Image (cartoon, rainbow, N blue to C red):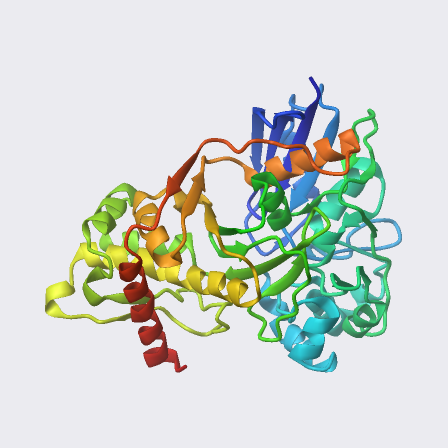
Length: 461
């Protein structure tokens, strides 16, 4: 039996999963935390990888790495970072993204060039910030890597990446399948540092010193799609700290509104994605306000009727990325004496979070993505109140896969693919899943209309 390891180097921690290369069965796991913050010393990722994988990798044949997207690891000629890496959630580059988008000809031209309208998260935006605010450091930069690229380099000595993660830099075009050196130079004040070679989906990056094959690796969302074996008609809704909505597509997208990021995936296709800032933390914050633990919050929300008695929560507690309302606050509308109950407030928080993500599903559908079912993952997906409300609000059947490290699983599946050298990735069965059907579509439509009305009332059409 061949064993493969998948590594998920996320914002908060490193997770390692060792799987059977033929079946995908998870055999052992490890984990190590990362320091908190929006910047990082890449060596912290390496130390976490070493700790999380201690004793797990001796008998594996291949390794794959999926890591947090975007970010900026800027190296000098000796391979030393010129400054701590700026992570995807570091917003100091917000104005740089706006300025760079305009220099590229505006949102439409930007989306056509790189598949997405730039925001602070993208590497290109961070390079612009570095060029403007730390030019003495920018002048020393010879190579720019993403987090997964850097870890692959530490394992193999090769500067390589994959098309999925490259599509989140802001200077690699999914439509054209190549780096846009003109965009890179515009972003970095005329400088054109070296960029890692882009590998094919099943191509090997190289080998570790002890001979283990290392696959191309990818970004975390692409890894999750591979780990879930997303097929046509599947839309993934991930309920983590932030929320994401994504699907596989056979053609690239270029949304000038900026709502959809036009990424590539890890299989040779494309991965249109919508991101919201507010997801699971909406529920934990509401539970804290009510003074209850999450189990009691869940029970309160389940006792309320669909529609929360007319309460509607616009859950923009941290501002919002989609819709683009960076300075917005949360708003609770529809308060009346007879509906001011803990049960209704808990239900309104669940419905508000899900309505925000349902708007992302609608955006993908408008882009031509088939929506046959929703795959609901992330910590908040295990909430029974969320599972009850989700089919109503999404309006399609919902599958809740068993809890698992799907990003690491996807990285392991990619490693198995590179090891086998086959045209397609191996068929791995999903762990057991809950199947939830739409039982009351009219109630779901009423909830969505209620939230649309609240949004129009507060923020306009």
